[in-house]
Image: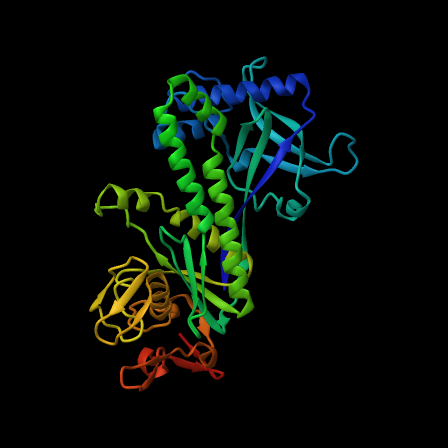
Amino acid sequence: MQREVTTTVRVTLHSLTERKARLVDREYTAFQDAVHGDDDANLYSATKQQAGKVWSNKNPREGTEQPVVLRNDCITIDHDEDTVISSWWFKLPVYNPERERGDSIWVPVHVPEKDTHLLTDECIRDSELVHRGGEWYVHLVCKRSVAVADEYDDVLAVDMGAKWIAVSTFLSDRDTQFHGAEVRRVREHYKQLCKSIGKAKVRSGAQVIERLGDKEPRTVEHELHQVANTLVARARERNAVIVFGDMTGVRFDNDKGRYVNDKTHKMPYAKLANILTYKAHLDGRECIPVKEYDTSVTCWRCGSQNTSREVQGRVECHDCGLDDNGDKNGATNIGKRAVGKNIQSPLSTVGAVVAQPETQVVLKGTNGEMEPANSPDDVGLTLSEGNPRL
């Protein structure tokens, strides 16, 4: 199977002449005017169109800076080992006030060695010019097709939540790990810090806010990358397909009080889902969202919803007597739903194959009877060279 993967490569502009530095700075400043509603800002025509889209779609607040959107048909990156200043050069579209029309300049850039193979014209999409810490960067968006496997030996189910950003469970033996404690610690630290800033004098609070900048979201994003790396590594060990709970819409029409709402709205599940999918596809394995409804209130062992969670971290089933970790229970149900146990859209809809022997989950009933969780008879599997196709 083929999947589209998007990678952002950050290249750094360097050794700019005074003229080129002025043109880059002028283009960036004019773009800020345009995205805040100035129709008379002089910009490269294609860049001005992008500024209009940013203004109409995002309606950015006054005083905020937006990266300059560079249309892919107006930019080029070239490699030349014979030049002294730099071996990589980037053609940047700018407005030339001397000629009173659009123009372009070639600027030297540093390119990370590990990303040089991505920089082909057919891969580059609309990109961004960014100014940060006194340096100029271009975030090149590269999109390409990668092959992912269509046969797997196990299923790694991931349940995302507020206390633990992710709980991963293998469907074959329910081997479970809890991920993201550092995300929770960082979020709580900055929450308490914001409270203390609110109680401080205005000048002191403003100084602290300026010093912090975007440190919290950058720290959280770094931790999310670490969690995603761990999950992909776990799946690689057992050649497992990754499935995760789709929490789309969890914030809408779901008012459960200020404390719970605060936890829910701060869950970075969408960002983690994007990072996890991207890294899994790069690793050559499928990563699939699964509807999460009722997975937390359903007993994974007997399927009953006659359960209770007097303590948030535990789930008790009043029919079969299950006493289990709530997140582990939810992750197991996500995995069962993915392979076709009580699911309307199993993995067959995306063409994934899971080998039967390693993924048979045995359920033990109240009278000691044993039942496979994903038997071919239950989910209508078809055989292909000895492997059930889900």
